[in-house]
Image (cartoon, rainbow, N blue to C red):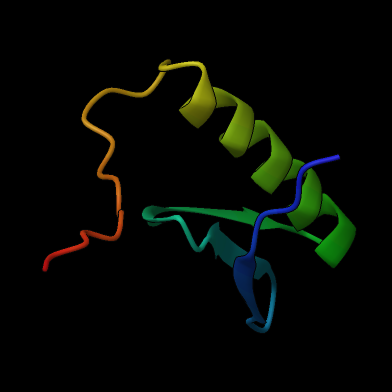
Length: 63
């Protein structure tokens, strides 16, 4: 099973969040469980290349 970190917060009406590896892509849900389902769907879309121009973050090792 794969683990990925996400950030979330609650507004008056919704739970909002994004995958930490892809902070440009936010989603929302009516409950935290709904938000998590949307985050899983978003991850599937991001990993399938269905969304163009995805920014990636990596570490660069320099001597």
